[in-house]
Image 1 (cartoon, rainbow, N blue to C red):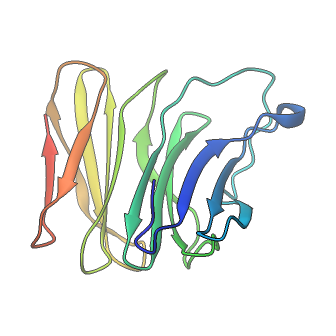
Image 2: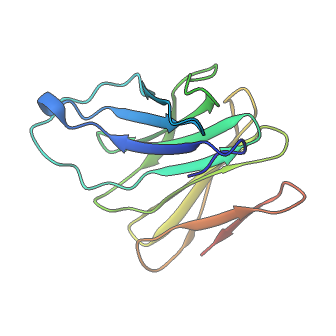
Image 3: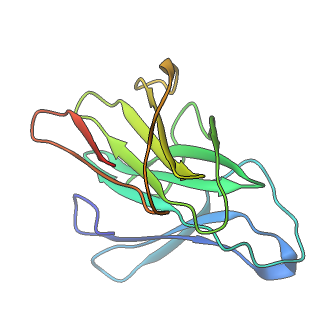
Amino acid sequence: MYGANGDLAILYREKSNDDRDMYLAIQDKSGHLTRTRINSTHWHVNACPMTYYALTSTNDGYLAAWPTKGDIYFARIDRKGAVLTPGEVKTPGHSGMRSGLVALSGTDGSTLIAWKRDSELSWRRYNAQGVAQGEVKSVPSAGKGAAGVTDQHGKFILFE
């Protein structure tokens, strides 16, 4: 994902020593590379979890979402790779193997996290402080993928 300032950001799960933590690597336009662990929920497992992640560019950095131990988390990250307050946020979402995951950022700093599981697309909205807004919503949806966009007015659109 290219950030708003042109830097290249890569979200990935580490594999060394069976620690499966999430990292964001950012290479700026001069070629300087930084690497930051963005999760606070540690996962030590002797396996290769087959999961999908989501990374979105925002005006002030990035929005990342990922599963850990079957639960879905997200965090906002600044342009340098530092996790912003409130840090890692656990959602009520649960993922399966190769489950679809979407992270959308609104123009007001709000976040929409959507996930696919058992032929159902579910989502929850969060305000700029990472506080849940309303209940989890869901609709039946075929397949494993999840997709969505934020329109030019800052509204979230999910595709069933």
